[in-house]
Image (cartoon, rainbow, N blue to C red; front, side):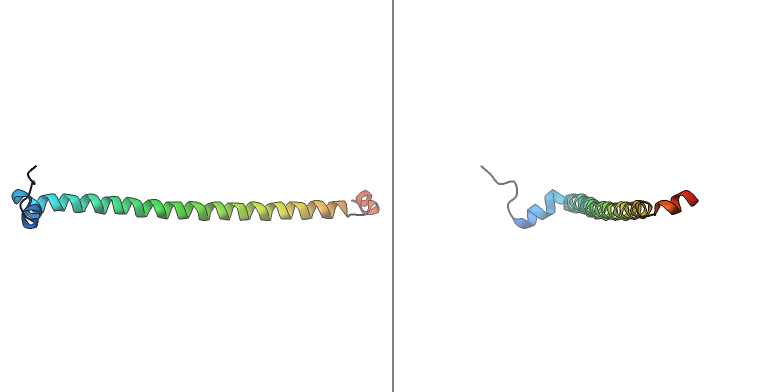
Length: 82
């Protein structure tokens, strides 16, 4: 089995097309890195949004519960006057 390149210099030169090959490799890796970073950012944004919504729903439930408790604690004499 013969190696494709005789030396590391020949490998990096890629038969005279090294600049274009490594530029394409760099562009692909940068694109993938950008996609990975954007995906992680969206993931964290989604988790933060879910936490905000859950906290809001919890506050709404607490307010509704306290309003129901207040209605239950109103004496009968005040209910008829209203």
